Length: 112
Ligand code: 5GP
Ligand code: ZN
Image (cartoon, rainbow, N blue to C red; front, side):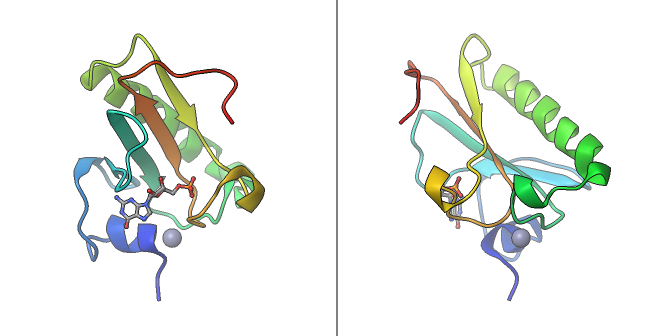
C-alpha cells in the first residue's frame, strides 16, 4: 500500500490541491497550524530528507522555489515559514518528504 502522500499525489486520496505539475503537488494540510498551511510534496517517494540523494537536489530546490511562489500567491510573502520535520524526534509523522508552508499569523522563534 502506497503511503498517504503517494496516494494524494496520485489522486487516489482527495485533498485540497493548490498546485500540481509532473513532479510535485501542493495541498492544504488537513490539520492546519496557521491560516495558511500548505504541504509541498514531491511525487517521488523519498522517506525523509535523510534519504534524499544528490540527484534529488534540483527537485528539492524546485520544491522550495514553488513554496515561495505559493507564498506570494497566497499573499503571505511578507512573513512565512518553511519547515521540514526530519525524524520522529522532530515531529515527522508522514514518512514522505514534504515542506510545510506556514503563514498568515505571527510565527514565534524559536519553534518548540
Ligand atoms: P509531519 O508531521 O510529518 O511533518 O507532517 C505531516 C502533516 O501531514 C501534518 O501536518 C498532518 O496534519 C498532515 N496530514 C496527514 N495526513 C494527511 C492527509 O491525509 N491529508 C492532508 N491534507 N494532510 C495530512
Ligand atoms: Zn510516499
